[in-house]
Length: 177
Image 1 (spheres, rainbow, N blue to C red):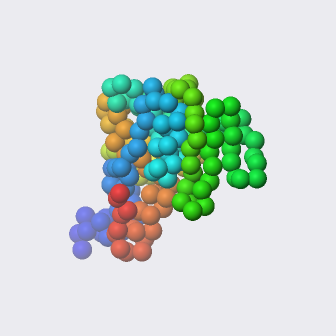
Image 2 (image 1 turned 120 degrees about the horizontal axis):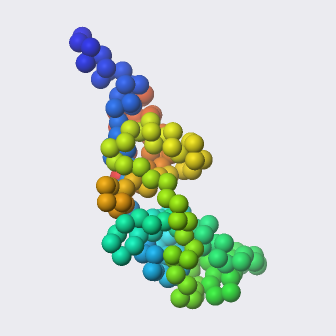
Image 3 (image 1 turned 90 degrees about the vertical axis):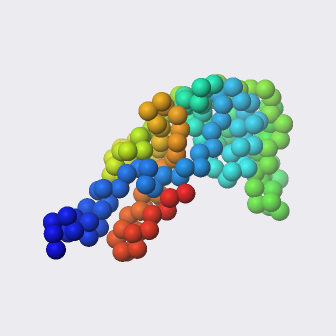
C-alpha cells in the first residue's frame, strides 16, 4: 500500500481533508435587512429554522436574525394558549399544524433587531477549522460566505457530527444538503 493510499484509508486523515463546502447545507434562507419583522418571523416558521443570515441590497451578509431576536422583541407574557405576546405581534404554537403561527407585527425592520456580528467561514476552510470556530465561540452554526461576503451555505454542529460518524463508521457518507 502506498503512502497516499494509507492517508486516504485513515478516517482521521479523511476528516482532516474534508472542507466546509463538502458538508454544509446549501439551502440558505436569507432575509433582507429592510424586511419587516413579520416577514422574517414568517420565514423562520415556514422553514422550521431558528436563525438566518441578514443580507443587504447587494446580497452581502450584514447580520444574523434568530428566533430569539424575534421573541425578545415581543416583551414576552405567557397566557393559557401558549402564546408570546408583544405590543404589536404574537407568536403562537398551533398544535394541529405543529408549527409557530405569527400574528400581526408592525412595520419594524429586521436591521434594527439583528445581531450585526456574523460568525462566518469560507467553503474552502477545513471542517476542523469550522468545528474549532464553533467551539471557541460557543455557537451551533456558522454562515458560509463566499469571497464577496454572500451566504452560500450554513454549517452546523450536527453537520460536523454527521461527517465524523460517516467517516469513522466506514460509510464515508456525508450529509450534504
